[in-house]
Image (cartoon, rainbow, N blue to C red; front, side):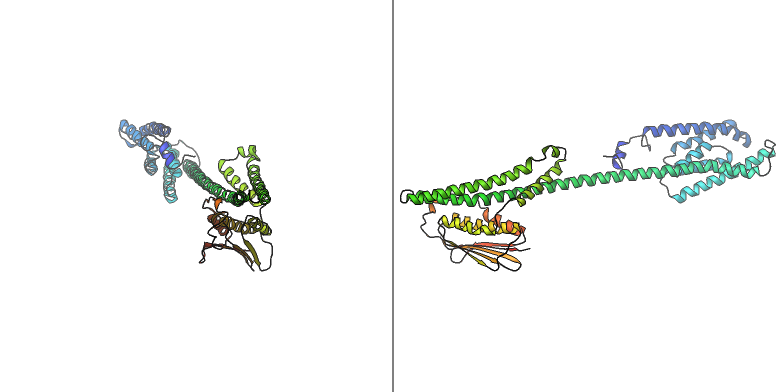
Length: 435
């Protein structure tokens, strides 16, 4: 990051009011040069004023040394230079003082007032000096030369340092402003990167949840039916070999379907993770996280999923496993968006899976209603029989089925309700907007 503001203040360490040692050395050198100049000019001033030469030299050294505080008190330096202008000394101090004053952060009215005072003082002193030189015969020119020389000298001693100081001050302020903007931009970029990383982590978590839900929907139903069929196969293996063979074939079909769906899903995940590996190596970690989550989300959306037309097959599989289940459809049958049909199918599938797990042998009713602006589904099972031939299946439950159904429906803006019925059964209801 750039070093401005507090960082710059902490990084710069110089004596007293100087930010850096080189600034102190420069000001000390300028003050020494100004003191030497004023000391030599003090000799002439002492001769003109009729005072001891030593007093004039000391006065010049003290006046010229004021330049050392030009960075801390530029107004004082300019006022001292204006004060000693009638003594015809302190020209270097006046030039440097005006430059420092113009480059400072002082209000423009103060800078303009002091610059005007310096200009007027220099103009008067030069006017008097040139007239004295012409009166003494040192200059033999016309009367026009007095105002010309006075104005030219006054402007030449005042305008250049003033304009240069204004330019340097404006440039310094511009550079500081650019540095501050760069710092602000870098902080904003860092904040955006942190937020992007948080969003990427959130997206990865959402995608993990979604993939887990898909895996649960794919595996739980198929495996539940396989376990039910295996239990039935065990019960009838000796009594009815022909039926046992049929059940074994159904178990094989269920296993192959489950493996096929798992391969398809894992293949989608592998293709989303393996492509463009070298190109993504040069991308920042946050961008990779966001891109990976987005790619996985698109892959799941684009993967071939079940639809409402597959409900009859689904119910037929449950019926083949020994469940007494019927399907009733209300309203005009029409097609919906793939995500809506897949969610509706998964709700019915998970509800039937729960019946296999917790109410084996119970009669189940599946109702599907096509309405104007929504699609509704309901799966309700009656109380299970006290003695069931499938009870030995002992299907485990992870407790995530109802949660997954509610998440799916809520993500589409729908309503999901589940709970026991008064008759002792269980009901799962969901309504999903058609748009």
